[in-house]
Length: 126
Ligand code: FES
Image (cartoon, rainbow, N blue to C red; front, side):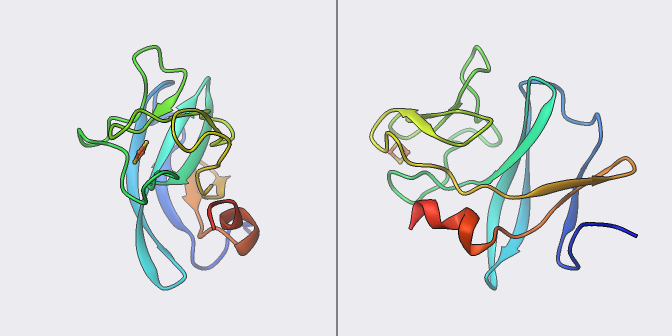
């Protein structure tokens, strides 16, 4: 019937988030509620836990403001680390070379589901 897991939640409708825009949501990961966000990068949706690789804190000083002005990078508001929206890799700033924890997304009909990252997906920030 569907390929998203029982613990997945609907985080957006297809077409709801415009390119360069983001949307926050909460997800239970390993029994803990984590703040996460979806980003539309060039028409493709990606999602990450809202936690910088430098200091483990949220990245949006202004609520839901994650992107650089040119919409090319996810930027941490604290010390300015820049991450690639499609891979979560830090390409500038203190945690250079580290990756945000990716949240897997699946689409069914016009709904976008997120599910908790597996150990593989979250191992990059351990
Ligand atoms: S906390 Fe994000 S760059 Fe320092």
